[in-house]
Image (cartoon, rainbow, N blue to C red; front, side, top):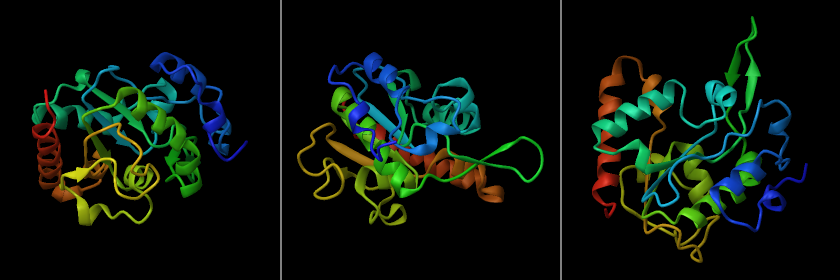
Length: 218
């Protein structure tokens, strides 16, 4: 374990090569308890790239991003926003599932990634952004925002804004030109946890995605 995935990222940049190399990543300890690495998925020439937090239990078992309950909700939100999921690239800031056991039974409970996990995994995200070079990058939730913009970025303050990419400051810095604009919104799992406000929360999420789509050249 090295504290960074940098040494595992191959020089040969293709999605297939990146995904294959990520399976051997030992940049942080999360690989020890995860079933497998869950790398991004989508077309090489995607104009929009969405970044979530980490794979969940379903994704950890399937090896694909956004295929669990939050992923199904994202499918609906993308459809309602007029976005074809097949045309976007979906990935996570952290590629392994961090979990803790439930009090009873064998159920695995989501455990939020720590800053060290976000930092260790950032070279994979940087490689995806560099290879795909999307027109628009969308951060889904606070962990994705921290990975893209740094820990001082506040989702509630910047949600729904059209943000310049690369940012003036943050982990990617002004040298990156992998996207032309960015947006920050909630993670689809936040909609699932919204309780009585679920409809309103969902509609706001769709509105954010629709705005991102509106400002993404076709």
